[in-house]
Image 1 (tube, rainbow, N blue to C red):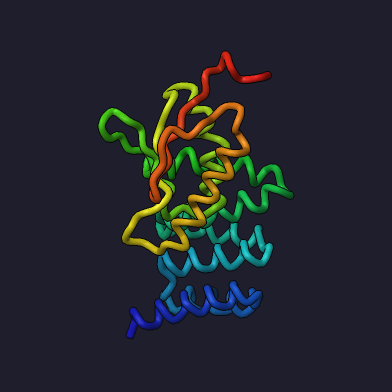
Image 2: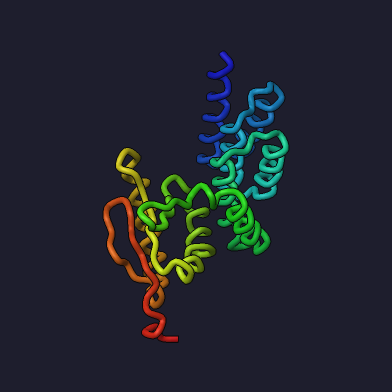
Amino acid sequence: NRLANVVTYSSFINAAGKNGEFREAKVAFEEAKSNRLADFVTYSSFIDAAGKNGKFLEAKVAFEEAKSNRLADFVTYNIYINVLYISGKKIRENLDLSKEIFTNYLLNYLLMTQKNKYQFDLHGLSHGAARCFLNEYIIHKLYELESLQIICGRASHNMADNNMMRVLVLEWISNNDPLIEIETQTEGSINIKLKDTKTVKT
C-alpha cells in the first residue's frame, strides 16, 4: 500500500530524529526517495530530524531539494525556519536567512484583519518561526499599527501546544516591557499595544 509506505517512512524518520539516530533517519529518507515515496511530509520530517541533530547542512540540502521538486509547503518552510533560527545562535548567516524566508513565504499566512484590528495567528508555528516573527516583525509593526492581537492557540487543538506558545509570547512581551503592554487577554489570544513613547525611558 503506497499510502502506508509513505506514512511509515515519515514516521520512522521522525522517530529516529527524536531519538538521536540521524544516520538511520537519513537511510530511510534516501530509501523513500529511491522508491519514489518521498512526499511533503517525508521531506519535512527529514529536515526536522536533521535540525534536531545539528545537521544543518543536511537540512539545507533537503529543503532546497524539496523546493526544486515542488514538495515544500507551509509546514516545510515552518520547520526549516525553526532549524535556521536555532542554528542562527551559532551561525549568523542562518539567522538572516530565517528572517528572509519568513518574510517571503510565511508572513501572509499569519496576517488577518477582523473588526478593523490586525490579528497574527501564531498557532501551529514552530517556536523558531514564532520567535523570528515576534523579534523581527511584530516589534516593528507595532510602531505602524500601535495595537494588534496575537492568537496563541485554538480551543480545538492540543492545550499543551497552546500553552507553550502562550508562554513564549508572554515571555517576549516581558522582555520588551519598556515598549509593549497588554491591553486584554484570553486563554487563546493576547491584545498588545505600544506604550506611550513619551513615558518610555531611553
